[in-house]
Amino acid sequence: MDIGVRLAEVVEDVRTGAEAADDYGHDEALGAVLVRPAYVVRPRTTDEVAGVLRLATEGRVPVTARGSGSGLSGAAIPSADGIVVSFERMNSVLEIDPDNHVAVVQPGVTLTELDERTAGAGLVYPVYPGNMGASLGGNVATNAGGMRAVKYGVTRHHVLGLEAVLPTGEVLRTGGRYVKSSTGYDLTQLIVGSEGTLALVTEATLKLQPRVRHNATLLAPFRDLAGVTDAVPKLVSSGLAPLVLEYIDFLTMAAITHTADLPLGVPDSVREKALAYLVVMLENRDADRLDADVATAGELLSDLGAMDVYVLPGGAARKLVEARENAFNTARSVGADDVIDTVVPRAALPAFMTRVTEIGPAHDTVIVGCGHAGDGNVHLALFQKDADKLAATLRDLFAAAMDLGGAISGEHGLGRTKKKYFLDLEDPGKIALMRRIKQAFDPAGVLNPGVLLD
Ligand SMILES: Cc1cc2nc3c(=O)[nH]c(=O)nc-3n(C[C@H](O)[C@H](O)[C@H](O)COP(=O)(O)OP(=O)(O)OC[C@H]3O[C@@H](n4cnc5c(N)ncnc54)[C@H](O)[C@@H]3O)c2cc1C
Image 1: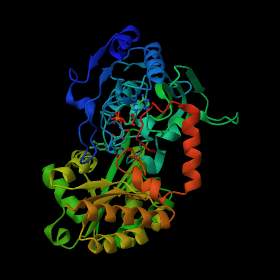
Image 2 (image 1 turned 120 degrees about the vertical axis):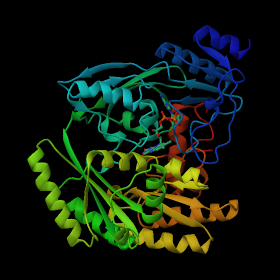
Image 3 (image 1 turned 30 degrees about the vertical axis):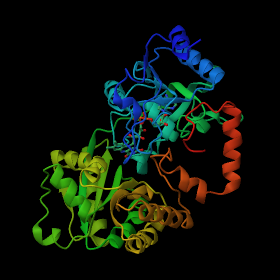
């Protein structure tokens, strides 16, 4: 019997790829080519997801999960003959549990929706990856990070438990509303960051934090990037516990402030000489203590070589953070050919950025950037139209990061676009073990084939 007919027996909302919107055929990865799947299904229940996966495994049909499609690594691009399982209708916040500081959500809930619900309880899910329209299912599958990781950590640190469906249709529950466990292999954490290749997440139990009311943002221009990267470990060690610690180079700053129409009040005499900026956001539950921290941070930044320190008014601070979060779209609009999110140990940032200044010119590639400096996570926009030169630049950048003890991707994932570099540069023993894990979860190889591994 035709797979479409059988799908309609197990899930209410089925459409063919031809009927479905173009959005289901791509994510936001630069250069991603639209691939129209054979079918798009939009389940409402775990049972429906299980039914779809059973059929897919039986018929050896590829399945790609989709949250909001805001991924940057091509991991939500489906196979042409495959099924997209879109979680947009499994979008309920099932519970906010204030006593255990936990939220239980379906995967299609967006960060904005969760933020609205937790605010009412005086709590916060503190992982703020740049796109608030992203789904929690997508965040779990990519182990999303974002600006606040320097204080609170990434998605992985906030996922306490999952309900997930295996390709066989078996439903697995892992973890729970507790913060520690020494009870066998940690299957929750194995699924986090697996980019839809091991299991489909149908529910997540997430750790919440108290919502802190007061925050302030400082902007510090520096004469050179080395000044910024040298300052970062010292700010982290200061005990001020910055909520955000971002670097922005002068070209990126010019582009994002121009795009966002955002005058920051930095005098021309400083702006003309500043080659890089640090953005430091602090938070405190007490306004007076926040003021004291701002004064301490200002002094520290000056001691560390900042040309000046500006405390931004609330509106300007919010706009700058939004503009920084939107830096990817700004890079795309000015013609960037790729954007990467390589991570190195935070103290290795100066060495890595020096390598970047050598690697770019060696391949005639222009590289500009910004990033979550507090995490050693740089977001570099590459301008190089020649595909071979671009690939050579990418390979050298990833190899340099790995030489310094870092990794190819800090938060966007490998997906389809960075996979070849991973397979090329990563320890073969590790890749072989990953293949065996994949085989154990998904013996028929139906979950997101072509993503992470070949
Ligand atoms: C402007 C912009 C800024 C961004 N800034 C950041 C940032 O600062 N930090 C950051 O980490 N990311 C950032 N991102 C990337 C993106 O928002 C994240 O990768 C996000 O986690 C993707 O969520 P999504 O719902 O859009 O997932 P999708 O793109 O739909 O899917 C991503 C992956 O998750 C899988 N998946 C989705 N749902 C499920 C599920 N229920 N079960 C199993 N697998 C699933 C998909 O198959 C795919 O492999 C940014 C993106 C944009 C466009």
